[in-house]
Image (cartoon, rainbow, N blue to C red; front, side, top):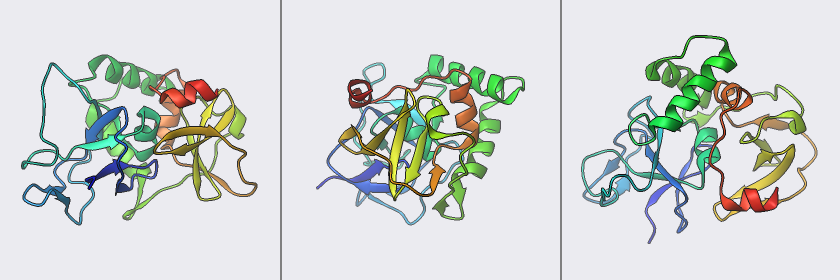
Length: 207
């Protein structure tokens, strides 16, 4: 049975066989004795995205009282859920994200905690995912943005929408009606200012 540690663009944590390209965490949110989640879905405002392999280190997933390993299809999924790059195992990417954040916000480069506090306010509405109005037409959104339409999540690449699933992306027409922004607005500004998230190969093949 797969563990409940795969993350959707809305930040929900579910149990599916697919693992994805990235891991990450929100602090300790599991019981190592049963390898199951606790009721809380975060214990830290530092929601980070990490590489799955780093300096040959190996971890038994959800097996000890340490950070809870979560998994994401790709970085766009993690960013949509409200995570950011880790400054320890992804230092170059984290630095690029911080620089793009500063350009997008017109501010000096922020400390990690400043980004975490801003993202925390933008990613949650109580315990639910906070969705936001679109700041621009869908075809004008930067690559890596995720939106919701008809109850599904779509990745924007080259002005085109690709429907998200745990298996990857597929070209699909977006349903007419209300379209909402899943990616936090602060992250969207970083994307618009030049940050390029790592995308699943299906997004590259479909674009």
